Structure formats: C-alpha cells, structure tokens
Image 1 (tube, rainbow, N blue to C red):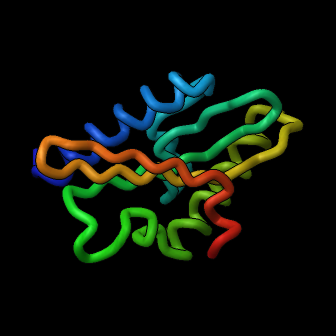
Image 2 (image 1 turned 90 degrees about the vertical axis):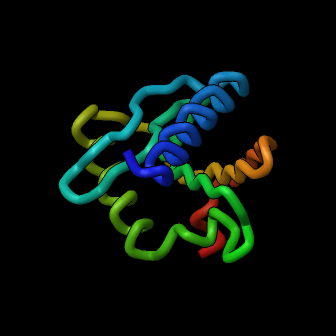
Length: 119
C-alpha cells in the first residue's frame, strides 16, 4: 500500500477514536454512494454528521482542510442525502472536517464543525 494511503487509514482511525472519545456514535466508515465516499458518518444527540478526514504529514503546502474542494463537497452532500432517504431518517445533518497533521512523531487533530459553511 502506498505511504499516503497508510497515512490516510491511520488518520481515519485516529478520527474515529477522537469522535468516540467525544461522545459521538459511529454509524458508518467509508460509506460509498455512486462516486462519493464519506469517511465517517456519526451521530451526536439529534445530529447526523458526515465527516471528511484529511491527514497530512506536513502543513507546508496547505492546511489539510483546504484540500476539501467544491467537487468533494457536492459528492458528500449527494451521498448523505441518499443515506438519509435510504435510512428514512428525519434528522439534522452537519458536515465536519477532521484535519490531522502527523509530523515528527507528533499528531495534531483539529475538528472543524459545520465546516462547509465556510466555503
């Protein structure tokens, strides 16, 4: 497996652990719908949260969250729309980004709630 794929999988595991520690219930990981993938679908209280995890070994070029482009946002919205309809849910939906930088054996995790409001 390519090194960046291993880093991504490690980041997703860190994100799941982080969310669980913060009282989120993990409903799905790597949920796919057509061409879209949502890294984590979680729930906290009455909110369904679609989480995009971005893991980098450095923030030299850009912050991890800056890698979430409009096309990815559109795909995530369509996937979570399908998920809500498919599961017949009546619930508020939020989109978060968990940005992880793992550098020099140190890990920094930043949880951006309602992240797509800023795009």
